[in-house]
Length: 146
Image (cartoon, rainbow, N blue to C red; front, side, top):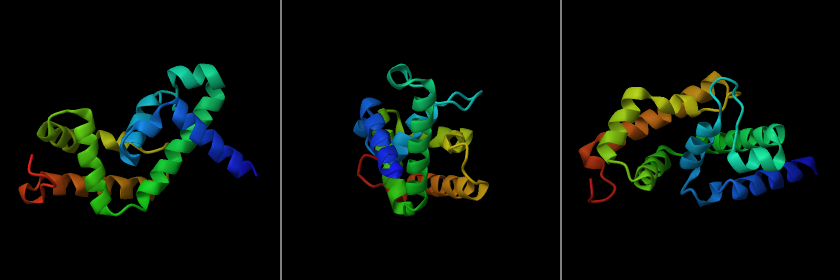
């Protein structure tokens, strides 16, 4: 019963935080990581933290972040490519700049949940790196806008 209640809380939290309007799991995970304070590791959301309380919002957002991460770990590389491509379109940023910046900064490494095992963290990062390699290959254009 507690698992069902936690899932309901996570889903309600996702709706309030407008996470359900984001295009895919990768985009949601990137957004959640941006809500995490890099000094304390605590998730802070303008509406949720005041509505639910800082501790409960932190716990719920952390659980949702972990859920997305675990789901992405079981996602095939082709879906990483599609989700990354969709994320780039969603941001409306220049595709080549995003790809170059992601490869250079490797900021995606900081999007992994804090409690993730190093092996899973590395698997996620390798999947992102492979998706970046595929998207940087001119023969891999998913649409003709490349």
